[in-house]
Each structure stands twice: as structure tokens, then as C-alpha cells.
Length: 221
Image (cartoon, rainbow, N blue to C red; front, side):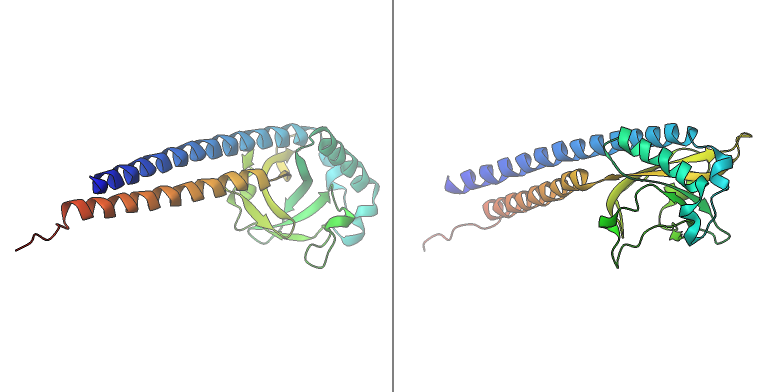
């Protein structure tokens, strides 16, 4: 009887762990997908406010941040940040002649707190290796967002992107918006923990069932 109670407990824990895993997985996917949609919408609306003639006038060199064109675009990106409190960084990049390598044009947040040896300030013309971010590269064709949480020198984020188009509708740059992914990363961690718990409980159930069905008590002679 005691063995059957142990099997029942193991089965209950297994089902409970599975239920928690499914619930956390649903919460994570729902939050992640909604965040992606929000970021794409913000980036798309923000891109419409950028004057491409001014943007193209920004010198792609270290001193370019002192130009009138840079300051004008910087002001617009800063306003976008202020009106969307969930955003941490807003920036515009352009393609280079190297496949997969982009360059900064304007970065709205070269804030002092992020300027460290491991996190340099992004100046006009600074290169960024986007080869591991297919969604960023595809944003020349239309709005896109990361399909997974990404990490770089600036932190851990989910990012949305949209093309900046000229008067003829041709894409000339990409506007990106970054949101701190700490909260969603925590949900993702909870999903992994609940999965491990469910697997552990399932193993305990199988071991207990094996003991009931296979291991027989010895009978006296």
C-alpha cells in the first residue's frame, strides 16, 4: 500500500510540474510576442518622423555628432524615447559595403553611464556586426523584431526595427528601438525551471512504477 501511495504522489507531482511548465510557457510566449508587436509598431511610427535628407547629411565620422543634421535627428530620437518610457535605446543605422556589417548614423543615448571600456559610445560611422541578427538585417524590407532575447555590450534586450524610407519609398537606413528584456528573461528562466521540475517528477514516477511492477518482495522459503 505504501508503494502505491508513493507512485500516486510521484504521478501527482509530475502532472503538477507539467501544468506549471505549460502555464509559464504560455505566459512567456504571450509576453514575448506582444513585446515584439509593440516594438515593431513603435519603430515603424518613429521611422516616419525621420527626414531622410537631414539623415543623409550626417557625416559618418567621429566628429559627425557635432553637425546640425546629427543634432536634429538626435532630438527626434530623444523625443521618441521620452514618449515611450519602456525604451532604453533608440538609434539609426545604415548598411556598409561589408555584408552583415552596419554603421551607426545617430544614437539617441550615448549616456555617460554606458560609456565604459567594454561599452564604447556609438558615434556616426561606428561599425556594428549584425550577422547574428537576421531580423535587424531584414528590416530594410519592412518592420521586424528579434525572435529571441539578444545580448551585446549594451546589455540584454529585445529589439524592434523598421526601415527609414526616402520620398521615393526606397529604404536608406534602419531605425532600431531596444527594450530591456530583464523581465521577459526572468519568465524564460521560470519556464526552464518548471520544465526541469516536471522532468524530475516524471523520472521519480517512472522509477516508482518500475519498483512496483518489476521489483518483487522476496518470499520466505
